Image (cartoon, rainbow, N blue to C red; front, side):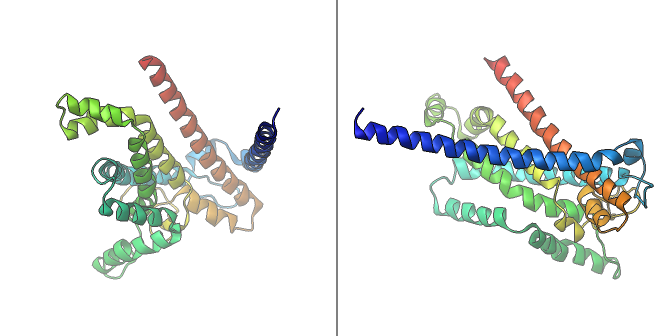
Length: 288
């Protein structure tokens, strides 16, 4: 074996070893986090957790926070998903090599890396304060404001994912469709969207998974509520904010309920990921 092949073989062995070690470290910390969350939160999981509202000492549960999180996250996704998919489609198909497209991608990357608390303060200024002036000085925290803040967090994720997924579609597919006289809009909707649909949907679900655990923006927008609330313009409880509040309580029973809330968020993200993979795996098998 020549020197160059020995060097390549040694480099490959070193790279594989380091990759394996990095993977093992990542999986170890993931398993550790899951074990701590389950071991500390499982004791508070029960019927009262899902049926009773705000906890006090060892009484109550997270029913209002669970419902509030579901409503706020759903509103946020309904706001940011259509805008994000359309913006990503525009970048990939109409502004791929233009200066405007480069500027939009740059600004989207800045928004993607912006601290969530900054976005929460921004929505507080543009949504909460104007509504406060309308309501004669009463601070108008609301579920709608919380949804807007979370939508700003999820939007750049969906834009980036949609843009990249559409750019991965082979150019020959576009050329074949255009050669048949298919209009650009129909090519985009009926061909490219179908080809990259799983990737775009994954981006939307990744955004939803990120929104599920955001706390800081909701402190300045939805604020929280000790009672069950359904109105879009009402203060509304959420799991992340409830977890934050309960961990500040000196009572160990409240800490257990906070850990149970963290466990619910973790299981939600895990179930969302598994269901997504199962859905697209079945869809791929049916197409094959």
